[in-house]
Image (cartoon, rainbow over all chains, first blue to last red; front, side, top):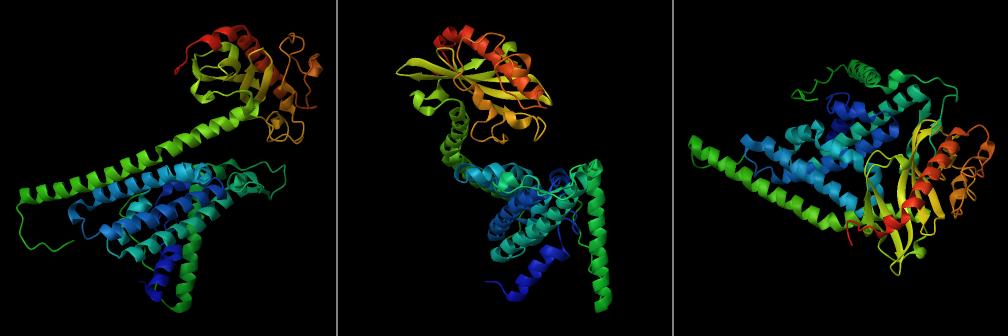
Amino acid sequence: MIARDEFRTIAHNGIWKQNTSIVQILGLCPLLAVTTNAVNGIMLSLATILVMALSGFAIASLRNLIPHEIRIPVFILIVAALVTVVDLLFNANLHELYLVLGIFIPLIVTNCIVLARVEAFAAKNPPVQSIFDGIFMGTGMLWTLALLGGMRELLGGGTLFSGIDMVIPGLQPLQLLPENYPGFLLALLPPGAFILLGCMIAWKNWMDARAAERARLKPPEPVSTAGCH
Amino acid sequence: MTAEPREFTATGMAARTAAILFVFVIIFTGLLSGAYLWTKPAIEASAAEEKMKLVDEVLPRETYDNALLNDTLDLPPTPELGLEETTMLYRARKDGKPVAMVFEAVAPDGYAGKIRLLVALQADGTVAGVRVTQHKETPGLGDYVDPKKDKDKTHPWIAQFQNLPADLTAKDWKVKKDGGRFEYHAGATVTPRAVVKAVAKAVQWAQAQRETLFAEKGATP
């Protein structure tokens, strides 16, 4: 179904080389709004993984039936319908999980990462590869958002994993800085998210530049994102 | 993407893509409607289950035998309850006779804004129970009014409202510090004071109205 090399390329692309948040810089709206703590970032990413795997599979399966001229409206239609169906099924059958993940699912419908990957990958590749592309793009988003959320909440309030008790009852958030830590509001506000995201992008580029220097290779070409945010 | 053997005119092309788009719309709208209809009963059931969980905390299920969530009354905004919006009042009956009513109330003067309450009043005027459903009180200080946050799990603060007699005087409806009958935790009196005051007002209002509230025809007979 899928060659080992191909699988590794897809995984590497999703998690590092074409990371949605720090390379493609896609889906910034939910990124800024949700990553006030690590748990929210992880939850949004999990919901995204699910939606991207599903929509990748659906569109890759139907790709030969969709005329090129009207592919975008058809993609939007398929993605929106699928996400709504997932939302309804979750609500009906996995209600406990829905209470935790539910608010994030509607946020994804409009997320352009989904549409961008569908257009860039699923429309040109077979279903199995498209599922993995969705999963690994989502995984790349997962670690980035978890890191960003974790840094924001640590700087902003001195805690880590606040809200974890909503997801796994019985677990308590960690208080890493002293109780009397005054808090740093900027980190919790959207500008703080932009600044930290900028730092992460710089760090990624620095890592890539160093790796390229070592391997005497050219740094990877930036990926075009069709101007959607 | 498929290779077309024939050449299409512009109108032919437009009609063809429109038809294809139409087919996709029909298929996926069908899928959506199917999923909606299929999941609707389960979603409604879990929403009702959620409401019942809350009601169960203030009113034991074995005390009534009607479908409480279907025996409702729309309450217009009532200043006595601190409510600025229309809310639902639920009526519990056993063998057709009124047992209790469950309704919302708001304490407007909590330490950090409004405290939302759910109150169950029995037909004889005694209070069956009270729960805090929403609040922003200081964590670890005033939030003990919410039994989930109360450190005393066996006798949470809010349990004092359970089975309160119907004939409390205005003097009784106060925290002990102010000469009433309700306990409080030292250092956090604003919150319990607000809750007690709101419950007192709500109970007095409901006691005065209870005949009409039980008799009135609701949304469903």
